[in-house]
Image 1 (cartoon, rainbow, N blue to C red):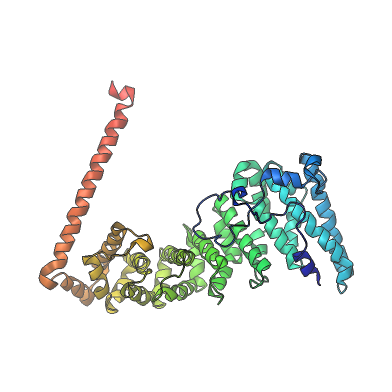
Image 2: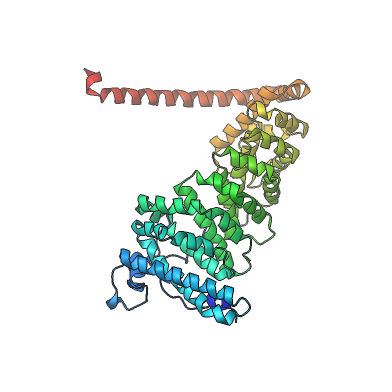
Length: 468
């Protein structure tokens, strides 16, 4: 049995996160994530008291009766032990590169202390010690360790240290930790480690999942990290992972979610995705849902994440050209005709692709591919069975009307004539429908205006000086 196997099958020691048997003891998730952790719900951290019961001031497991409180000096001793074991393992690996038996014991010791360091996640006020004693940089250095099990153990520790709820418990400690991780190019190191993990091995697949969790935690705590993360190779890896022909799993779902997060409100990342042929990747992944509905709620969530990413990218004019050349219009038009679950999201994509002067080319192409035959039936009557997609009739009407408005603004020449002729067909029934929608929304605007005026009067009446 090699070192990796020994590490993988060692019994749990220290404060390593375990699989809880009692779901009532599990820490509640910080927010709804749909199905992101749908097959890892049992992988939760022990409660703070439980962790404290696992580790003494010297970082050694004992019975509950002998537990000492974990304080600053205990954390310092734990970090010192970690540094010593890390140095010893490195020294032995250099000295005996061809003889694993010589450094096997040191590797197991290093793995043990990394597991025990999970207890530090219960006291974020002491995170500054990890930085001051250079433990963060040492942990980042271990992400390049020859044994992937050690790398996975470090990733697991970093994931717990950066848990968003824990970070919010101590803003000062969180800022110090995140600053140190960013300075150490943590995203680039994590991406390099991702490239060597084999997701057909469960432990390494969990390592990928925890890596993505670290990135999500950091970007949620500090959104400006999104741009740096994309530039440090993460965007390229996400696109490659989405293209990989593996069965759908939680990691693919998580990749789609991280991609959508990176593209929010960030034109630099949107441009980079376009340069990496990301528009084509998104269209290829979405083409699966042209004639087939997602088989599970988790797969549906992934589909919506990909549609969200595509819509974000189309807010950049250069990506609209790539969308046009990649035959994105044809794919969306086919989705509308097939009447599958993807239809409502395809409508949203077309809205983003055609709006504004930058959407002129897409508008003309949409008419050329006979898109008017598809869009007008949706204009005349909102389709039934939209509940599964989570889209309301109001949203559907708004997207259809926005598409038609973009067509009327951008079309010229023969294409514009073809559009206008549609409104004269069947005794001008489309004009009647247009007036019906106009009066419907006019009434809604009037109701909203009255409500706003009423709130203004209430606000003014509540200020004594204005009443006088």
